[in-house]
Figure 1: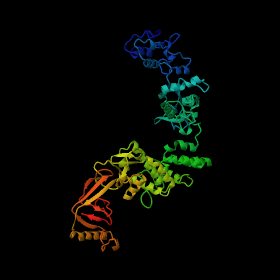
Figure 2 (figure 1 turned 120 degrees about the horizontal axis):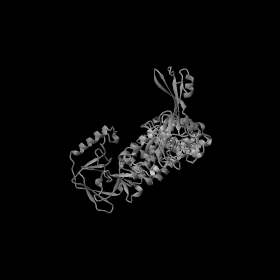
Figure 3 (figure 1 turned 120 degrees about the vertical axis):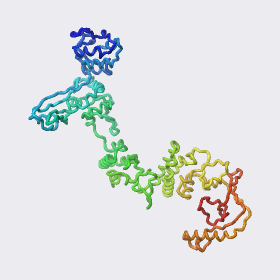
Figure 4 (figure 1 turned 90 degrees about the vertical axis):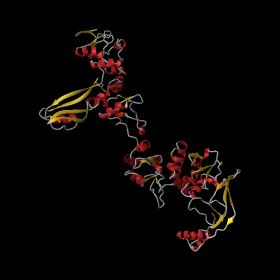
Length: 583
């Protein structure tokens, strides 16, 4: 078809240019009242036509908002000789003036310098003085017009997808403004919402997860775990963000969840101040029945420390440290209350708070730590041995100390030990999964093991800080002693005279005893030194064997041996009371 004001044809079958839509068609349309073809009718000015499907994704919703505006025919895209995309046709039609795109239009009114009160009512605040030119009040509306509250459902349902396509235009247009001069140009942003925002706030247009349309005040913008039964808007986060930034409020008419339900849903994510306020609310409003549930909920609650790390309430104690019967934190596993910031610490220590914190670290807490280590050893044990080596001895000690007088803890230990794992040389071993026994090395010298013996031993430093603690832990874990598996046999050559070595050795013994402030009856300065006799032999050998295997000879230059034939400790400064010394 030909435009009445331009001899160039721009109908759907007359676009022969290969240089693009904007180069040839757009200049003609923008300087003339170009006509465009619409379905089943005569061509119309492009300003009177709707850009809808098939040029706009979900463009069918525009037909609901502008039912009396004819839509542009699909033939432009279907039979475009240059094979232009639908998006290119859409941009061309919209730039040429086609309807349907969300656009914000100002509504302006001029006021005189003296009409300051009207400006204040319009904005919701006093804009300040203006010069003699007065001020210009500006409201905003959107096009196509937002329908009224009585609009049928199809029209209201079309609003959300239409705004999803063009919500960026709404930014910075949610408040009324006033523009004026007072020495310099000024713009006052009011507290009253723009016309389009007021209409959206009152209209049932928000699609919800139950397929119903509701007003923004009656629907949550995002899911709330504490109000799982409340309707939630089916809108993109981007659209919700723009609308909220412009002042549209969602969910203001949705009832708040009870405090206890909010604690159950949100407690583990709240900061110290917010959590303290919520705990106070629950404590002050909970009924007798709710208080029972309140105590149960606290069993799963975590609280933030000053460091920002969160701790389950069952790992919080009143005090932790060192000395005076106060146990340690087991490498930060335990949180003392003095590491909780106010006002949360004050709320946790309130006399009506239905949770009793232990005075210091307990055996139950230590067992929880051990179970965590054992579990992690079976999944991601790399680097774990170094991480826990200084903590495991204390954990075993706390747990086994308390187990002696606590039947409940003794039962928990019995149930937990099938999960136990120990570190052996370079790997963690889960005791229940290994067919071969794992031993506790009470010999302290692997030379005592035959060279061809394949024996796995647990790292003693993980089991305790002293020999007695290590043996107690080994017994509790059912680790047999290595000395019970390996047989030792000493052989010695002919005895020789010691000469003046004996008095010198006894002198050293008396000096050592004196330094330790022993009494004479205990081996003091006038006693027999450290209770050892000295013998000189031509040869001293140790033969070791695992039951049923051949013996291996272990070279020995000098070693202590007790009267019972037990092997002494080999480290510098070790001793055996009442034994005999070989040199």
